[in-house]
Amino acid sequence: MTGCELCNPKRETEWIDNLPAGFDFNVFRCRAHHEFMIVSKHHGEWEPHERELAEMLRDILFPGKAIRWEQLSIGDHPHVHVVGT
Ligand SMILES: [Zn+2]
Ligand SMILES: [Zn+2]
Image (cartoon, rainbow, N blue to C red; front, side):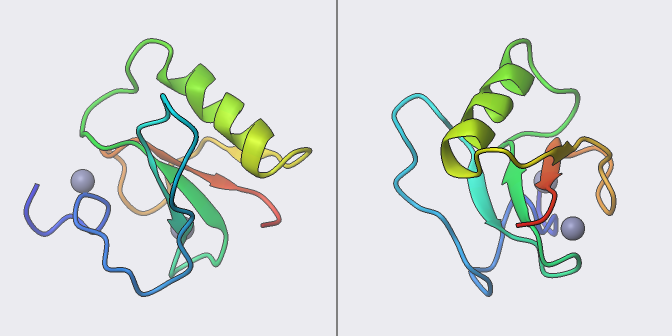
């Protein structure tokens, strides 16, 4: 979606590239909250199993950290913050 900063993220912050195979997310540090986000690549609701994938990715990249499921700034683009990253 044009103008959505989660659809077209500027690479202004720290990114984690080369995610393990099967994880189709963008992972980068939120400019507003300074925590890493796991960002889905579509709008609307989370897809089935996508939440579990996000938790699996959290376990790989940020073991022991909690996910904040509340979507703060952009409510209709599925994304989460990883607390304390
Ligand atoms: Zn978007
Ligand atoms: Zn944020």
